[in-house]
Structure formats: C-alpha cells, structure tokens
Length: 62
Image (cartoon, rainbow, N blue to C red; front, side, top):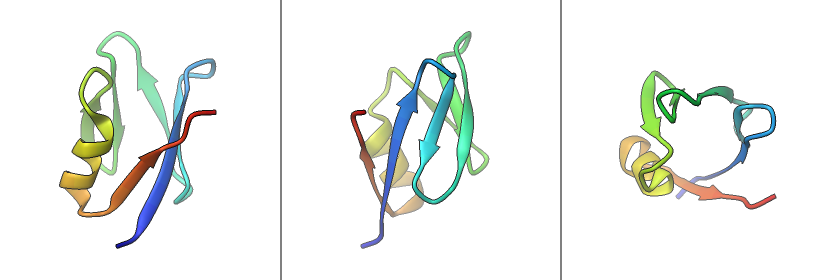
C-alpha cells in the first residue's frame, strides 16, 4: 500500500504532506482541507485520511 507522510507545522499554520501538498490550518474551526475534504484536528487524522483515500498516512513528529 502506498504511504504518505505528513506533519503539522503549527508555527506557520500548515499541514505538509510528502506528496507535495501544503494546506492551511483553520484554527477557528480546528480543521484543514486536503483534496477537497475537511479533516478535524481533534479527530484521529491518520485514520480519517487512510479511510477516506485508502492510502496509508503516517504523522511525522518534527
């Protein structure tokens, strides 16, 4: 299964993915939009991404 790494850059308000996508974090809603779908920071983002796109997503702590 394909694997995509991502990490949260809270200092700059971004979520950065190894597939080249960089998305803004909406701190008011505590969410971000990736590939047209909204994901909430309080949820299990890794599982939600994997389930939605059928790709393994791995959160990298930096």
